[in-house]
Length: 59
Image (cartoon, rainbow, N blue to C red):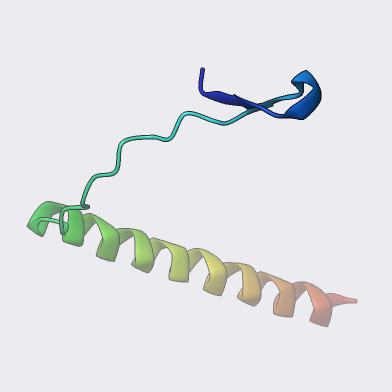
């Protein structure tokens, strides 16, 4: 483990840094999956908003 020793014997430990890599752009399948997830998220939020409107008008 990498560490430095300062005056008086105090040790400072440092985390091991992960390897850096360059991200790859999403392929066509991943893009399609992202679009499907976005539509499902919008339907969920829209449905929850509609439910709150209906529930608030009942009371």
